[in-house]
Image (cartoon, rainbow, N blue to C red; front, top):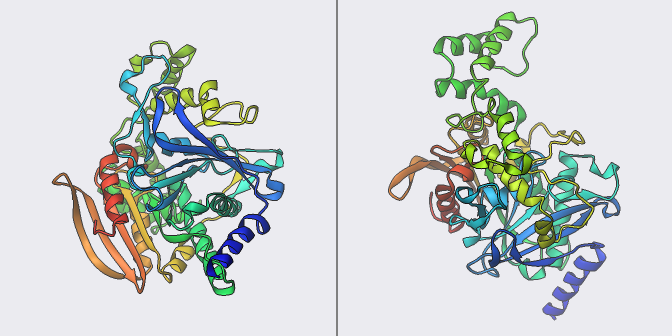
Length: 461
């Protein structure tokens, strides 16, 4: 009898609650690589009014045990950076072979630190206009933080209804950078949605959410920007004299500067000038500001003499990815709908997107009253979103310190530092990755994989 009711609930979810317009294709091989040694599916799911927004996704099954390993919904920041960026540069199973690239068609190789060794990963191009996602109408391209949460929530529900065999897998939701502004309220919405279903119906929950992962997250716009001065001081980018002067002159608020406070204005201008040519995403890497136009010129004209760049700048690597993603054979292999996207951009910074959520700290605070697990990790060389911001916010949650600040190791070397907190059934792990940039898994892939693998296995970091 129970099985009959469960079948009825699945039917209601898939048919009555949602009118699902979706596509799902199996991708057996990719240009630049050949036959894939893992299971990849791509497709579209319609969301929003009349499903005018068509969100493109990649789904890679775990290479270990797909029906038992957790499912991770991973969102990329920006807003407007594509799932392609995470797939090929962060934690996906493939990466570009830059050493072999000489201007010909880009070659792909296996990523030895892919998270799909232990996870099923669902990537989505969101918001609308990102990657291969598109809108059927012009007005559909206008979006904002609040609407994006609604779109991803609808996307996840419909994807689950269309992939019933993964509904019982443990679910984690994660993302990096600006997607922190989306992941945190999305997790709360998913959790509360499950609670409503379990409390008021005979149905199982739509998913089995266990927690969330935040990588160098934007959580509070003010804190994320205001901590840059202190971070710059800690990294010897500004002098002690300037730091003391600007701290007293601006009263610790470097964002809401009083235009009549000439001392604060002057000191902040001095600070801005000192960090002007620093790569804020990884302060030890080349900024490439001067060479970027030259690099773009080299990458144009059929990529003549591309080997001359030696990929000194990350933008050079990203350009190779865009070259690959715009190739007609690649689009065909991925089942991208013809005529929906004139040109693929790794990051589409659209004026049609409005940032209308300045902080998600209260959402994060609400989640401390759940039984979820959370992992927040940051690189210690990121000036764009300093770890000082998220660490300060974690401290403000007033959680019980479970394990004090301590080093963690990979291959016998210190990979960073970590501490953990708890509140009843809620657990939070905060981790610093030594030498990590803004997108930590880009320049510290092995360390981050070791970290996520331990955390997923409920081991201490």
